[in-house]
Length: 393
Image (tube, rainbow, N blue to C red; front, side, top):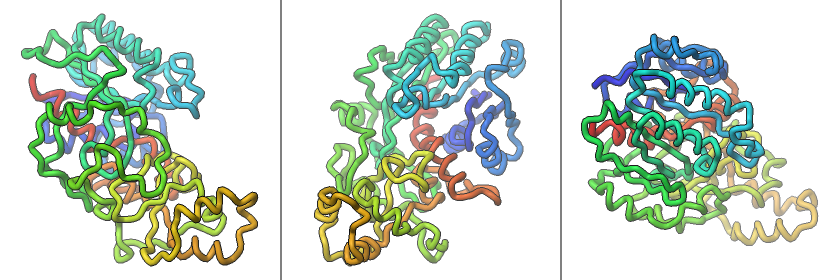
């Protein structure tokens, strides 16, 4: 069955790349996003795709019917479900377009066979999620919900996200699709990676079954999403098969790293940084504020291994200091010798599992690149879900 896809909130093309990596037969009939920078990146990578820039609320029932799509992939705005976005949920104007799509799904006679939704952790307890489930039940869909992080697939980045896959029962020949209506016990059930064409990325050659991965994740995922601190590597998903950050990093031979070193002003904020080094198997979630905001926006990487002082002790010293501006030259020299830098946009893209042929158009600033990456998704995780969603039809 060829997937004829409507890609909503298409961003820089994360869903499109996931489809491409899934090796399924597909056609993106229409992609929609209003972010001009994201659209530039999308069009740069998928020049032949029908990408439109207009508010999704303007998508009418007749337009949807005329598209004759059988699949909707969407990653609605996450701000209404985050603390930073004040958690206004379905009352947030940014949720309006998603609720409009739910109304269209109810109205259209021949419904999409497949629906995939991605959003932040927190969506699973929202009123909007309740309206999504109500719509799916009303329209006779079978659905499965997930809370998944790339750490579960051996990828050294913590990015816990809510996912939902749904199938229209009228089109499904085999309906033994697991239904989960309990948002507090969402379990990942898709299998680990077996191959990939990512730049600088090796994936697991594992035949681990869905059942065993589900058992592996039985304990609560509630702690994911906190700002992980230095050298914390004790999470249940990290093991000897997990990959290190070095597998995803560029070398000075490939790029001038001078622009990514932290300034003295940024180093004075050392106490609130998540500092990692290339051998670690974990980094925190990269957000759209990365590169110009320190706390909770993403990890910074320590490039020096010749350190004569405990970084934990140094953090304690900073916490006990009444004013970090009073740090002397000796303390600052210690921090400079750590050789701390930001991950490059290409490295962040690697950790999000964008393939090696993904690139940015000329003219984008670092801030713009970090912003659109922070608003994107993990391509590999979505690839697994697309394959899982379509495998029994």
